[in-house]
Every structure is written in C-alpha cells, then in structure tokens.
Image 1 (spheres, one colour):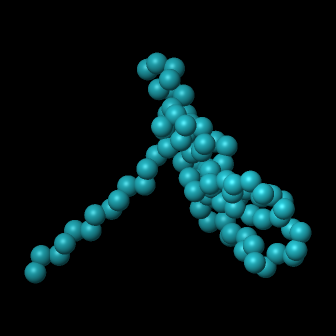
Image 2: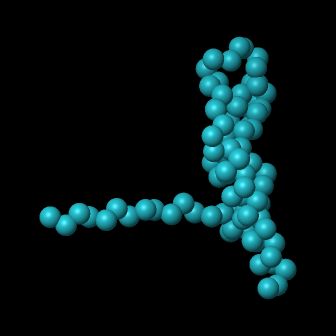
Length: 89
C-alpha cells in the first residue's frame, strides 16, 4: 500500500470511531439556553458537537475540522441506502 492509501484508511477509521462515540450523546436544545449562551451545532458527518458564540455572524459550520479534510480529499464515506426486499405475495 502506498502512503496515500494508508492515510485514507486511517482517516476513515478515525471518522467511524468519532461516529460511534457521538452516536448516543444527548443533543443540546438551543431554544432552552439563556441569552448570551453559546449556540451548539453538530457536524453533519460524524455528529461531533461544535459551539459558537451567540453573536457569531459568519456561516454556520456544517462539518467539523476533521470531516472538512475528508470532504476536501473526497474521502467522506457516504451513507449506504438499504433496499427493502419486497415481500412476495
């Protein structure tokens, strides 16, 4: 294996580890927070929690730093669609 493939496999393994670690965590409801509290966002890739100050005016992040690297390199795993088997009548 060349070093690029090894780097890709390690990055995807770390991605799956982050996904499993964030799978059962409760999410913060921003509506219930006090005024001035940081806003919480979640990575669309792995689900990691990201917080920004309430007065943050730039675009809301959709991916964490690690997932942005995966997207930039074209390594982001896609969710597989599960086909349901049609029951034979």
